[in-house]
Image (tube, rainbow, N blue to C red):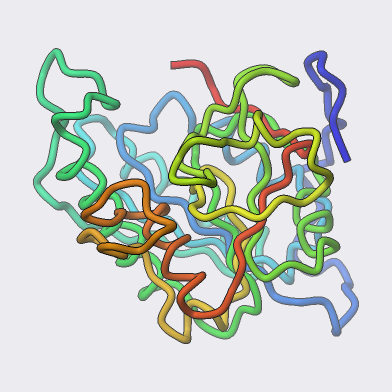
Length: 272
């Protein structure tokens, strides 16, 4: 399953459709979780993408966590929250600051700050998960700056039959992998290296830009490690182990669950 390599134009669904639309009572409940920070430019399009999803809204819950923003992200999401709560099964927003900012003049990918930065990311994801997860069957982790994905994203992920599955996040369809936290062979192979291996490929570590997880696995203890996990594990890229989403992938394996990637199911991330 692969999108065309040209930029996709997905149809827009009328925003008047509400959560009262009838849905098969047997359909799973899905919780969409999005941690946000300094997200002002992304918010309108993010909300539009949520409203464009074709999965029945009365089976979708939404959880947001705002942390350490220096802009008006929190105020804007608070303004939109009543509407989101009307449109979906429920929508909640939490505030939790961790006191962390990327040092001025330093790129977010700089190796010198990754331990602290990824620790904070893991803590924020866990904080959101522990507050938001209720009776839902699935958790869809969705970053606010994933700028293009199909309206039937949830249906496609459910249809995979996998307990942990990650689409291929890129900047251009058919281009290199953007979310390089999803890998195999100690970080040597990413999803763009695995396009010829089929629709599903086993991963050792996962990325979190778009990540679909059966909720009971989270309930059983699968978290985003805020300290290096998997010291000495053959799957780990680093001798000390892995943090955040990569650590989650290692932990999932240790719990008996295989994380899967979909090299041909591409979603777009905004260019930074």
